[in-house]
Image (cartoon, rainbow, N blue to C red; front, side):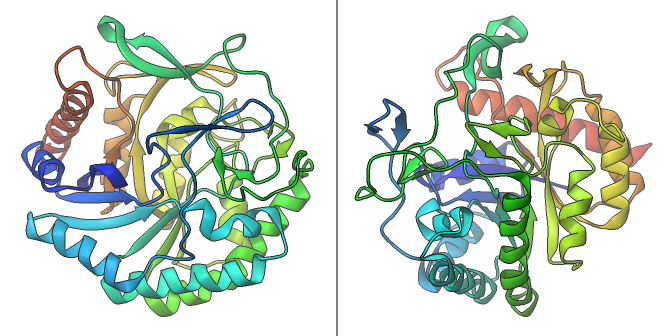
Length: 355
């Protein structure tokens, strides 16, 4: 197993690469769809939307090669990209008029990743995206974190036209709202996506890795969700069996799920034995949807050491990434939180390897 650090576009610089190296990480997961760019937009419905999708149609070979080179120059490896820019594939999610054009552009990105030597593309097949989380002081010592709590989330209003994943993708969209989507419709759209893209991923040597729905609610803002129980992962894998159709396993999200056919430890055991996990979001939580809160890796409902033992026993060799950890009270809250998580993870892995 290897340790990684996830960085958004505005964080992809030498100082953060060196911080990752100093904290014990060997790999970077890069988020090129940076929805934390400055400047909030207000939609007609009053929703606040962070940033806009880019005006480009795909990521080029030159920019991906340059990104990997800069990371390699600091003694790190680029493990994966995470999340397509919504502007690149929104009609794939919506089954809209530009779907076929955008699928071709996704193929361009995958081919360029293969040429640039980037082995994995993490993605989240969702119209709503991550929505409804509230900033709270839920972690040890009152550290700032986030949670999903009944009574504190915004009202579930419909999603305005021209908006996907809490980002504006079409400023010229007519007034009104996106129509509700059923489970059959969203699973059909995913199958269409996988049927089109997995063969290109196979040819390019790039694994697609699917993230579960967070919050793991069956329907959110009128949109059906895909992976809200651990067993739904198997349905996704079975749509198109391939080494290149894989999972981005988020431990926190799985723990948040209401009880299903098997628990988190069984899910980690099952999917790691299958070799279906590309990389892991290493995050701990307390509670289950619709009431949960994020905490430090060593204090929540999940026995994270037990998870590492299962992964070690099953020969998992992928990357573990601490996932939006609580922010500590100091001059650099984000880095302190990440350093705490990486330090705990590194020490635990060393203990397991020496046992």
